[in-house]
Length: 126
Image (tube, rainbow, N blue to C red; front, side, top):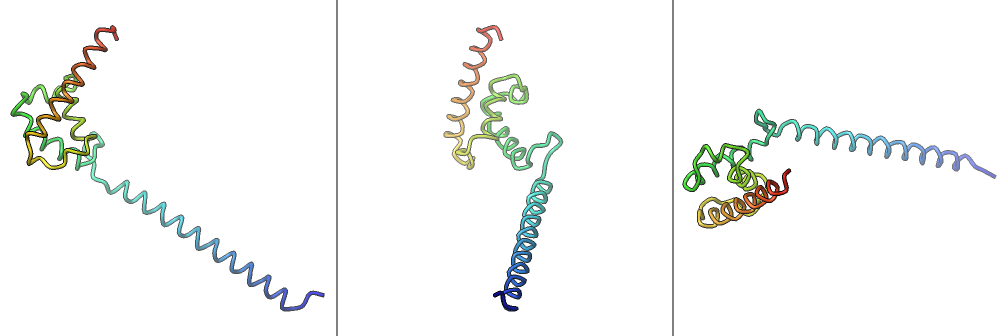
């Protein structure tokens, strides 16, 4: 036979499950709000780029004008611009601009890559 304690235990168990559910829902909502805040607070420029990338690109330009005219670096159709963009957005190894010899080597290598790729695409008639 069921006793009064069994009913109380079921009520306590239901109440505990309800509170755990509410607690998890609140945590999930807090996590979603935090992610939205981070996304909204990341500084962006007019093109929607992260300000850290914009700053890195400008710093790289100041160093790369020693090897390439600024007009060429600013022209998105050139391999030099594509190399600059790759260094600023993708290359995780170039974080310190003190060693310009390594930066120059990486810039030359990626410029050569984009030059060969552009020539290959042009040769295929695309």
